[in-house]
Image 1 (cartoon, helix red, strand yellow):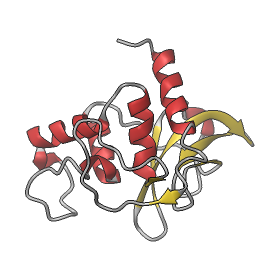
Image 2 (cartoon, one colour):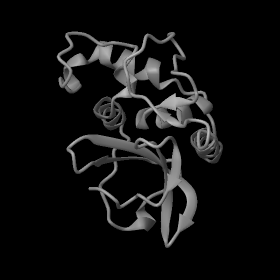
Image 3 (cartoon, helix red, strand yellow):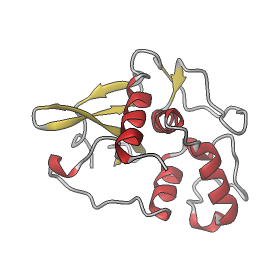
Length: 166
C-alpha cells in the first residue's frame, strides 16, 4: 500500500496537470478501451478530472466502478435506464462516482468550514440547473479556502468554488 502522503501527492499532480490541457468540455458517450480507457486528453467532463487524477495514482476508477456495479448494480442510480453496467460511461457519471466512494467508506459529512476539507478529497455539488458536479480539493488555498480542480464547461480549472454550490 502507498503511504497516504504519496497517494495525495499523486492525486493532486494528476488533477492539476489537466489544467490548460483539457480545454474542451465533452461528456459525450464514447467507446473506451478497458481497462484504462479515457477520452482524448484535451477533452473531458468533471468526472474525467477525478478519473485522471486517480489514474495518475495508479488507481483505475473505470475498472473499480465497473466491477462494483457488476457485483451490486442495484446499489447504483437508475437515472439512465440501463439494465446492466456499461464500462464505457459508468465511471464518467457523478452519481456513480459518489455511490462508489460512499459504498467503500469514503463519504464525509458536508461542512461549510473550509478547514474540514483536505487535499485530494473528492467533492460533489448540486448545480442550480439540478445537475451534479464533481471536483478534487487542491492543496492551494486562497481567501482561507482550498481551491478545487474541476471542469464545469471551460476546460479543467483550478478555482475557488468549494462553496459555490450546495
